[in-house]
Length: 191
Image 1 (cartoon, rainbow, N blue to C red):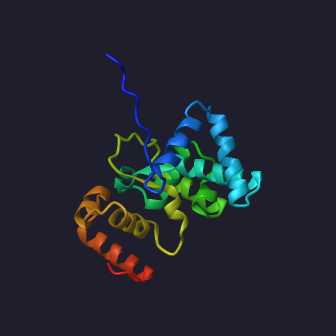
Image 2: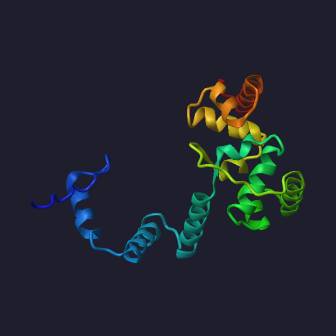
């Protein structure tokens, strides 16, 4: 039986001819060749230098690797920020400076937060796989508290109900209602 050749996936903004050309041109390209073509495109079409592209790629890689499982927030022993810092330090192996840069906080704040978290909970997180993850980079915005940011993200991005968020975070429904409404008020959006 002959093996069917898979048709190239067509992006909705590309014409079929353009998609076929790209598929044929890059079908046998190595990762290095694809990356070089992408960098050349960014340099030419978006007027970015190689250094700027490298910085963007490094930031994207760092943000991609820093997904937080929602179940780290279920513990009553730690605050939300303490849970984030402890998880990033112990489970992801980030440095204090790396965590501070990711969360846009001072290195000393991160060190102090980690020290408090370690005194409250000595054992590292041993978590079962979580159904939901959130990017750590959302906590870099400082206009909301950590819990407000988390609840707002779960409600708006993942479309979870307030009750489901309360169950996920091991919090009272009224607490989540208050936090989400406070976040909406601060952001000037409808709850």
